[in-house]
Image (cartoon, rainbow, N blue to C red; front, side, top):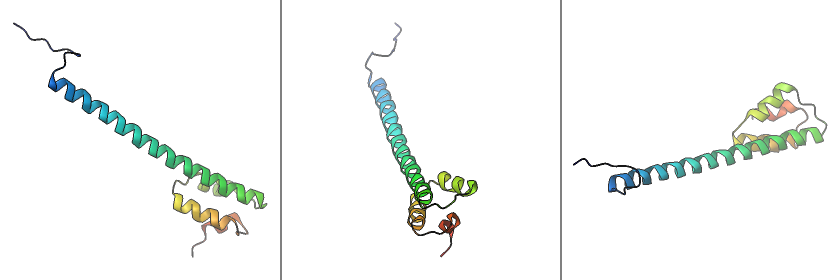
Length: 97
């Protein structure tokens, strides 16, 4: 007699395996969502920095614009946003204190 095991048979091993796969997929989705949210927040903050500078009539050289839009650190972007409210040039955002 030959025992055959195929999906749907309901063995404990199979159920445990499938449960583990389902959990792994769920965890991956949650991590992806969190990363996406963080990226979205960073993009929004960078756009705010650019917008404030533009509204204030401060020219933004392309390298400076690229540095702002490529940053993913929310703390740094928040600092740059705060500085954009009083800066006289775009480069003032990056001044060391």
